[in-house]
Each structure stands twice: as structure tokens, then as C-alpha cells.
Length: 350
Image (cartoon, rainbow, N blue to C red; front, side, top):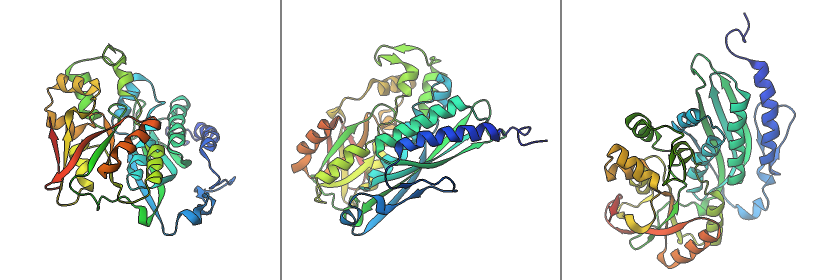
């Protein structure tokens, strides 16, 4: 008996790895040290332009995340090119809220059986995500496990490392009453709330993924697979432009838990975030899900991003200029609330 008889095709995997290496090189910067051999990726901190001048006390920042059950939708639709972008976004967006700049990314793909077409689509998305984030795809692992995954199932995990000057870490400590909350629009659901969304749309309402929805301007499957926005480049621009630490006081990535659970993570003990529900346009996918499942408003704000992918808490004197800059960078952003006296929680008004 051979390894292939047990369901693991190492020859096909090795051929795929050669293709992946060619794709990875599209993301490399001068700090990546290429070797024809090795068990790990190499990244030179000395290769970062003006490293010594920009970092007196550099801190490495690391995070990891996955895509969750959005992968089920990708398999249902048969489209795997965008979930790689989601994978990068989920870690990179967590990293940048600390004020960090992404350096490199690694991925882990677990699948029942190596399918070059599916894996190539996934990795092409990861490469695109790394290019959007401005980081190198330094390495990865593909595990073929037919005993754990069945019928084309797969799972993704990503790992990101970035760097920030210690004095420029954005930690929320300077947030105070009167500060304003800027919301940056999301592209849709991003990568959270899919267990509830799938249950409502496909099980409760028996909708088909290829059903065209007028209010979306696309099919249901296409709407659900819109990739998560990666905010690394605009946030890096804003943080460099407004170097005074007390201007950008706190940043929160609105992922699992929505605004209700993510904003309090950066609030001081005497601050409450008031969010004005009518301050921004909520994309129709959210009302579509809410109506389809009779979901309470509070639950919607706890599960989904409700059209806001990231928030910044800023000195109100600078909020208009920050929004203008974000708009020049291609982001939609508005003031969606303010900080009032209270305990660290979110209050939805309107």
C-alpha cells in the first residue's frame, strides 16, 4: 500500500506547490530572502526602507484568523477566487487597528483532496489580498486530509505579522467624552455572520444562490461572496498623515460581534459609544436577512457589521479632514457617532 492508496497524492501536491511559489513571488518586497531550499520563510527587518529612521523601538504585531462558514457559500456557488482575499483581510484588518504596518502573511489550507483548480483559485485570492495589504506572502501549508474533510470541503487559516513603533501603538487610552466616531464602509457581510445568514436564506427561505436579487444588482451568491475590504493602505496613510498620537485615538475592526462587541474593546472605563443608526447607508443585504429571519435589530448589530467595516475614534477637530482624506483614497466614510460619559458599551440611537 502507498500513501496515494491512503488518499494522499503527494505528486499532485508537489506540482501545485511549484505553481504557488511562482504566484507568491508577485507579493515579494526587498525584505524577502529567497532560498532554493528551506523549511521556513525568511524576512529581513533591515530590508525595510529607512527602517532605522522610522523605528526606534519597533514592536512586532501578530494575529491569526480564518474565513468561517463563508467557505460553504463558495463551495455552493463554485467560486473560490475571493475567499483568499477574505482570509488575508481577516488578519490584516485586526493587525492595523494597533497602528501596525503589515510585513508578511502565511496561509494554511486543509482540504479533502488536492484539486489544482480550486487551490489555484484560493491562492490567487490570497496573493491579491497580500497585494492589497502591501505585504509579502511568505509561506504556507496545504494539508490533504481525506479522513477529516469530505466532498470538496476545505478550511483556511491565515497568519499575519506587522510592525509598529512602540510610541505609536493605537490603544484607545486617550479616548474621551466628545470624541467622534468615524465609520468606514464595508463591502457587505465581509466574513462574519454567515452561519445565521445561510440558515435564514438557504434553509428557512429556500433561496437558490443563483437567484437574481434586484436590490443587490446581482445574484444572491455573488452578493454573499463579495470580498472583505482590506483597509491597510488607507489606514497607513491616515496614521502617517496624522502623526500626533491624540488625533487617532482608537481603531476597531468590526468583525464577529459587530459594533456591539468590538467597539467596547478599545473604550476606557468611563466612556460609552453612541452610534446614530441613520448616519450611514446600510446596504440592502442586511435588511434582506433581517426580514427573512425576523431578526431583532439588537441581534443584527451584534452579529453583522451593518455596513461599517472599521471605525476610528478621533479628535472632533480633525474628523472632517480625515473623512476628506479617506474619500480621496477611495473609501466611503462618515461620522456615525460620538463618545459620551458612561461605561464601555455601545448604544444604538435612532
